[in-house]
Length: 189
Image (tube, rainbow, N blue to C red; front, side, top):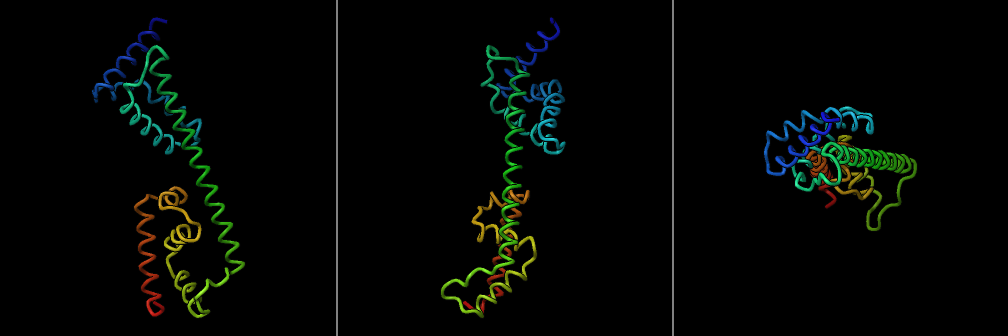
C-alpha cells in the first residue's frame, strides 16, 4: 500500500514538473507509465504501430495539458490512462470512418464502371470521350485522388484519411493529375 501511494505521489509530482516544462520529468513519467499505456492502446486498437502513434499523441497531450491534472480527482496514472483510452477510441473511430469512405468509394466506382454517367450539358460526345480517356490514362493513385476529390466531393484531408496517406502526398497527386489532364485536354480548351 505504501509503495503504491509513494508511486502515485511521485507521478503526481512528475506531472507538476511537466506542467513547469521540465523535459526530464516527461522522460521519467514515460519510463514509469508507458508500458501500461501502450498495452491499453494495443488492447483497444489491436495494432501495435497504431498503438505506438497513440502513445506519442498521449505524451504530447500530457506535455500540453499537465497543468490541468488535478490530484484531488484521481491519480496521475488514471489521468494518463483516460487520455490513452480516449485517444485510442478516437483512432478506432477514425479507422472505421476511413473504411466506410473507402467502401463507399469502391461501390460508387463499381457502379460508375457499369453505368456511364450522362454527358454534362455543353460537352459533345467527342469531348466527353476525350475527358474519360484522359482520366483513364492517369496513374492509378492520381486518378483515385482526383475521383475522390471531384466526383466524391472529399476534401484533401478526408482523402488523406481515407487512403491513409500523408496530406502532402494527396495534394501532390491531385495537382500532378490535374496538370496532366490540362495538358491532355489542351485542344478542347
